Length: 478
Image 1 (cartoon, helix red, strand yellow):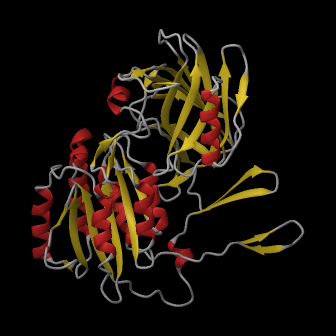
Image 2 (tube, rainbow, N blue to C red):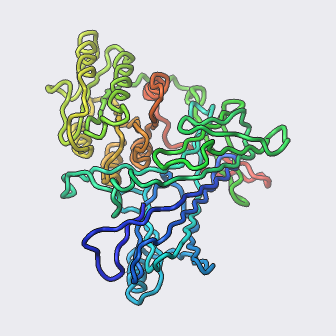
Image 3 (cartoon, rainbow, N blue to C red):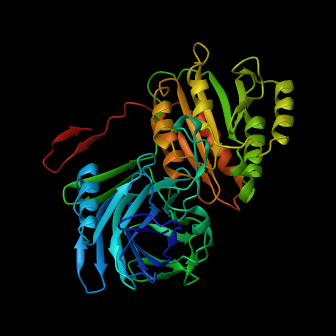
């Protein structure tokens, strides 16, 4: 969204410029995607002085922005240069003070999936088009049977933790979430797909139409677009591409002399000449019960998932349940984990049934810090299953904490709802060698949850080495 601020001083009453249109074109080539986002907005304020517009937008976690351009009314095209953050901010402010037009793109300091664009000295009734391009690697999901592309479009209000001196809900950057939810923003979306052995394309988030462009029997070019011409920016756009067969190794030529390898380990690849040792595990379930979980039936999804988990744990293992919000509480108060048996499972099911979204804020750091200070039992590894809508603003601080316990703990994270922080949900799994899963509205959770639990019961592969044979018979290790 866009917020107007004076180039010289802040208004006593904030004014807003509606973002007129967002157009997205995606080109998918094998297992990589190039995304072009065009955003058009107009200064409709009837003021004599130019204004400054500030807005936030999300991108996929670990995507790489490589182009940022502004196209003005008079046809001028301004291309951005990459500079050190403080230097760029200083140059931007100097330009505004001198009355010049200026544009600044910044990554959010607390969450790497949010960017803020500042458009300075925009004259009354002037129009500006912002074009952003980025690339990202696509994900193999469902054990290598499907490729998924996600275009984040919504940023939910984030909870600012008490440790940061706030302890309340606030909007990303300097935007106003209430205005975002009421503004009539729309998006047009089209996607071209090539060099993929796919049999079908579907979207669990939006109605889409699919056409075939070429007659290439091996890799036909396919196009996907939204059925509704102008769709509101109220949830992420998700495309699932079903493959002809399960992919174990995938290779994509991204640039000349560059190859991307995606590996889906199987049980056969995990076996060595030595018999695999029995792994003893603690299973700790951390469930978000903050007020935001009441929306979109998220707390009900959490209860469904927890019921499946509790019914599926191995007899003799150890477990516990933590629910958190502004504070946290645990199912068993006497120990970090207790033995899983018929009686404890029955009591846990009662505890789950009574779960509500009634714990206020989202102090995720506090409960994870408590677990970090209490290591697992001797000769046990710890598996944490974390279910959250991810609406926090201290993402990087939480990820650093989780990385510090990654030698003994893996996190299997679940992002609930239409706008979880993808940087948080995916980051938790990445820094602890776990796995992540997103559960958008209108999803059946049973199969997905069972798959995550199956992964947690398997050993973790670390220190992988890949050998590459080149045309000159040279062998390199990576």
